[in-house]
Figure 1 (cartoon, one colour):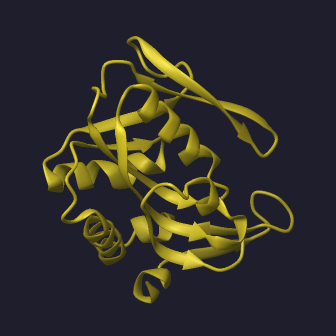
Figure 2 (spheres, rainbow, N blue to C red; figure 1 turned 135 degrees about the vertical axis):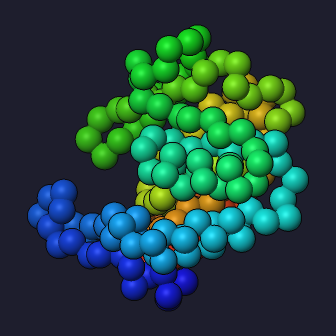
Length: 174
């Protein structure tokens, strides 16, 4: 969406040399930009039959919580290892330089729950693929994945080819 794209700040050479970082903090710090982002993400899940919204820390929280509020649905946080206080289930996944572990409370998704996953970015797809494994491992069904930004050149959508994926802002490169 071109109107929303104008709120994204491009930062050269962050977090390392040669990377063009798409900074969403400029969306968040502008009332119109934030409203537009949340409204467009809400449109992407409009009309769906689902039970809950799930999002990874931290930016999945930023967009997932207001959507859950507006849609009158529960919000389920996915956190890094060791951040949740009750019994959890976890999944290990590949990062660019190593491994990561994500966790969710074991009692948050019931067998047959229909789940919408909300995140800020679809890049390589590794994090979202891991989240799908968590949801399905608890018996849930992913009915939609909605991201604010997608970097087409990193081919993350290929890892999620069996799922309905929407992105509001699309960049052709990395």
